[in-house]
Image 1 (cartoon, one colour):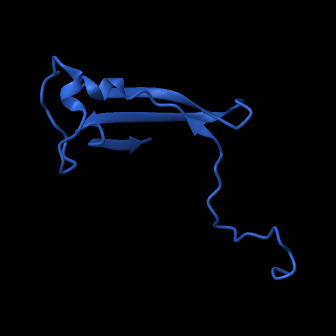
Image 2 (image 1 turned 90 degrees about the vertical axis):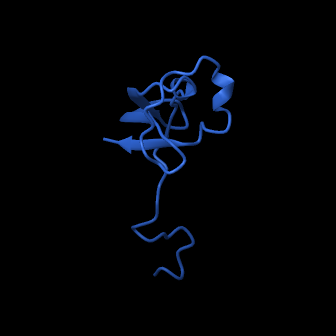
Length: 87
């Protein structure tokens, strides 16, 4: 059956349900962010919600307790260093 069905996929195949837009400007200012974002499908209809928390981290992935920076451009190389948690 599987060999003859060109649309067959294993049951554990990842499926994209939609996208969630998460603003990262909080990280540029070294501020922790908790938010409830909407997951949209490709027709921009609500598919669900995602509770997120972003924390500034050092290069080792440990929470960084550095206070807010005055110049966000100092974070250009560090924006990718954040601890991602989903709930």
